[in-house]
Image 1 (cartoon, rainbow over the protein chains, first blue to last red):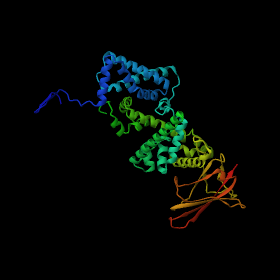
Image 2: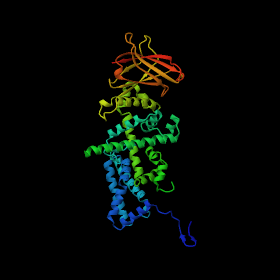
Image 3: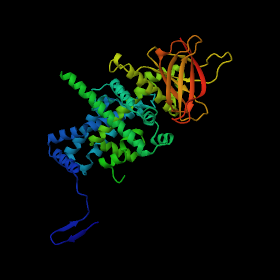
Image 4: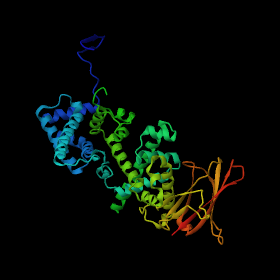
Length: 217
Length: 227
């Protein structure tokens, strides 16, 4: 609706273009961008804290190299902050999309240079599972994780649920294939996967707490 | 997508985490989701958790795992490589879990489960009546999972009676009732390796039409444990 003017008893609203009311997230991002533009160093630090973990996850996944992901992440933030200081951002609510775009371009440029330097291209380069060592449970080793998965699996009493997890996470079958092979409905599939994730998180937290308690003692 | 700015509710309701990790998002959806996770701690937490879980499963039960290697050494490699035999793998692994539980007291908490080996038991015999199913057990601590074919019979459940097969020794090794085919219409019988010293064994298979009826013999199979 454009150029709409309404008059009611106590209020009048005139709008050239209707915009949805900004939510909290949008207001926060607008505030951060405005403050950086004014030279507020704390706002720059807030942006880094807000986006750093997600940016590193994305870059680690793209490059399969934790150290490279850190370097590219730092560079992406520098590019972003320079832009915000100089010009701000036309749509502050899309700050994360803008940062994602910068990071993607930096990574693509670096990887293209790498490929030109190396004669052999590893076809599976982008398909590797990233090392979970840098996630929120970084103190829990890969071998401990393996043991936790075995414990989780051993708790399952229903044969079909065990098959769902094996087919999905070991054999990499897709949901439709698994549902068809096991003659189950999608909601059941999602329930089993969701419960496994919940239980896995519980076991990780238990292991993490046990470790912290033993360190304190 | 209407625009590139994704809300957490949309990401959650449309199962973007699993679809992203499976590589089944469109390019536009992938870009929007990747931008979203820069700012959404909840989705990022779930992504990292799922990555770790997926890797954990592959480490525990994939082709590089000790469980797989031992089963492969027992001749079950082709069985376990195919998702069609996910049930077989599940039984194998369940046996490993059972072994781990039985041996819990003697192992460090993270000592890992015992080895489980899968052995299909063939129904045919050689001309000289010697067993054709030969089992070579990896260690006394292993668990042997015998896959027994009930044939074309259709019973409510089965009883398996495993005995020593020597003329001088017909003692019972194990007797299990209430078994039902779990995959490819086979019965899975789990026996600790230490209960199977080298020698010949017989498996008497019986079935019953209902829980209230008596077991009737279906077949007799044999196998030999070799050094």
